[in-house]
Image (cartoon, rainbow, N blue to C red; front, side, top):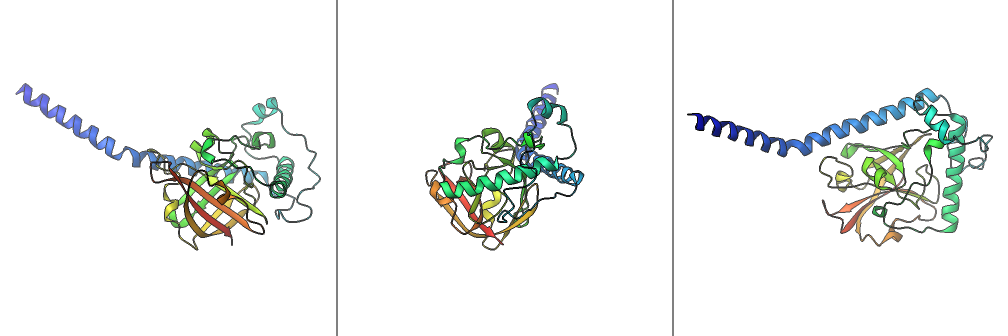
Length: 266
């Protein structure tokens, strides 16, 4: 009798363990998705607490690179630590950041791009904490047709790639404008996160939105393609176009190729 009871308990334990293993990925992805939505809500709340921003949001305007806040001192390490709990951004520092990003995008197009595969984990190009963005979240990317909502980080470093969608170093800052192509890279096939798993289900004409520190930009999917990791030329800026490109590893769970979704400004 005792032996039968032990066998029963063991069987139940193994069954429960099997159920846990079976459902763990989906449960983990669900909670990770909630965490990312919380980060997006915090981002929107910080913007709301900041108030109106008094500078242009058109990166092609003549004044976009020059404004009265261009010489605003960046925050030092001590200042960042002291103010890291601040529930809002510094409008003057955001104005300077915007002007510098517009200038960066213009110079990137003029001088050409030196790209490497984003999974080489290049470091971020702007330290957002110096501009009062203490959590380093630049904004978020969303695609309603596949229920995508992910925070955006600048620079495809190992840490940024794990946290969300990372702007590929050497590509345009995701603020829009002619002669830009902001490439966002993220993983696919991570056991406990959805990440860019579903971008393969995006179809031509689907909308993809970028919400940054200043505005929301709408893009439309125009093409999808599978490329080699070495074919970085295929994600470079296309003259005269305002583009967003989503990029992830392919096939699912492997990194032999890259799956690319090309979008153009609506």
